Length: 211
Image (cartoon, rainbow, N blue to C red):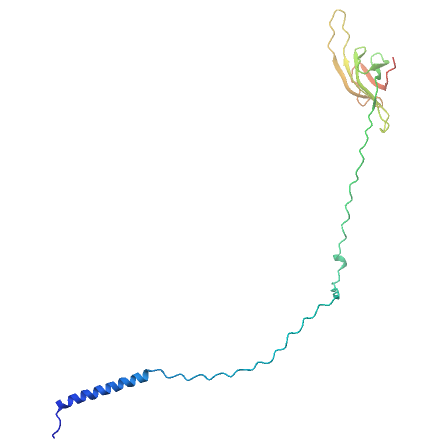
């Protein structure tokens, strides 16, 4: 038998190549599978030490001893301030009793004519005008000082009008007020009557005589 021709060998080569390819593919599949995991050995149990039972709680003592006081730092004398003084309550004074002056009905006056040096003493009842020459005296009030006053005095409130008498056949001239205010018997010059011709002052106050 003579040597094989190249054309006759081609089918055999194809078969050989196919078998090799199948073998390689089978080998790849085998190599691609994961390797088996070895089993984990079991851990032996560990014995725990025996636990002691909990201690019983102690009851609190019936009597508690007081704590010792903590020592305080010394205080310097300069740091000690005196205690404020107690505020005294204001004294409540009893209301003062005001003693009113006693009032009288009649004022005793004295007048002086500076031209003739004639002096006259007369009485003027409260509310009744009294004429002395060209002066008309009208007493509004007359009273005496009380016992608690320093000076014993008589005080009169009066008005003095200057009104000359009318001449025969002529009308009465109008009156002009010459004085208005208080006169003091103990101090005639304190509030005097200022008139160019006459002078007058208070002597005392007295009660009216019974009728």
